[in-house]
Image (cartoon, rainbow, N blue to C red; front, side, top):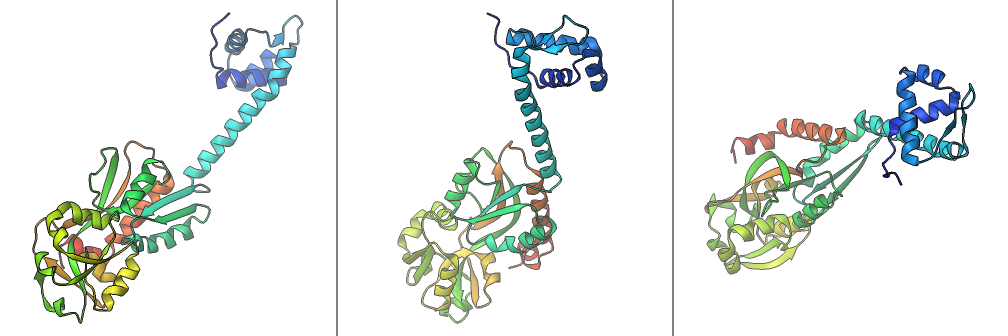
Length: 310
């Protein structure tokens, strides 16, 4: 028995054209190749299938029973390949396709303006936007369910990820503007022990960063409330009953909040995009990232953080 080899698309294409023309000469002319090249490829296909596909006894070739059985399948393969090529071309030309974006709760608002512009310019692209904890986002990224994610520094950053830094900020104490601490310019974590804290719950990205960098101090603080919703966290701080530890940049979204600088070292964190290293980046992803970078570069708030103007 001959060794089974996979059929080549070129062989199937030559076979279909010869079957349509019922002439090797006409088929070769139509394909703009030498008749000998077409004949060799069809003979190789017949050898791989271990059966003749054409009767060559007459001047005009005709399909054998095996050739007639193969023809509709070969046409289907060629049709599917043509459809696949059109789909890829449409995706590359932004006429169809999808974009799957993930962001941690505290940074999703940065994507709003870019989402509006992107969907207006490319209405055929279906966009899926998910807000999750950092841990969950990286799980979805590794499972190929997201194209890229927006987070602050990833604790235990995976070596299989590539990243693009957008801007950096620092961890700070967030309080209401009328809170007794609001007049202070800087404060230590230890000084927060007498105050009630509302913090992101464990597993959320910012909380993981804080726990990783200041494990001893965090054990001494009175984390009375833990939440997985940043908007509710803001509302709680606005009651003046709780304070929190969050990125300094979040103050800009809340005019009634004040961010107090922490005197501890190692409080800087960066906002970055992450995607799987070595993975093909589709056109929609590249265009969205370019739009996002342009928007952030024009943002006064981001300018302040890039130039450390707090």
